[in-house]
Image (tube, rainbow, N blue to C red):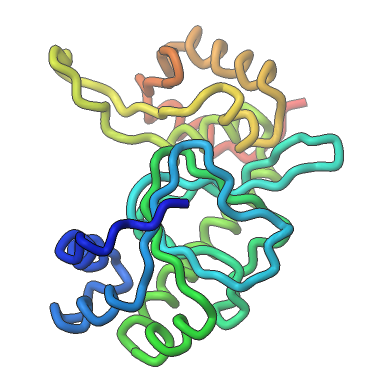
Length: 243
């Protein structure tokens, strides 16, 4: 990973101020934090954490998306989470954070803050404002994990796919000639979507083609365009398994 050059203090302070857990700090407090916290950039595709890394480290994601996943003995990947900017994650017993044999991979160019165990104790947990924000984030993470577990336990693959597309949907990317009434988009490959719902790429492609035939989505290269969110929501909410 490439650490940001020290000649960019203003940008570094700006990055830190935009991170949710630091939003209660004043300018001077953020500057002091920035002096002690290294920032690093990683390009798309970088696997920057693996089960072989024993050291405790906390990552604070400022920019980009990160995928957490497990690998089976036969090399099949199962995505357990897609992390967005402002999220904390890592191997840190102090915060109840465990990556549990997980890998962390940059799905896009990422900007991260790295903190050691001592950094976390001295700079985060000692400040009740930051500790409160961390508790909020971890609480939300638990709710999301429970939702994913529920999806795997009670929903079939099409229902899981519908739920995933709604969770991952984002406003359409800027285009020079965007038509009126643009629809939300999900920018992941079929293989990535398959790994997130625990199936094979061929099965995911079949499900997506069925959704397209039903008028729920459109398919573009590396992108799913959501045409009918309400019908996807109805499908994702069903609890009965289809045989």
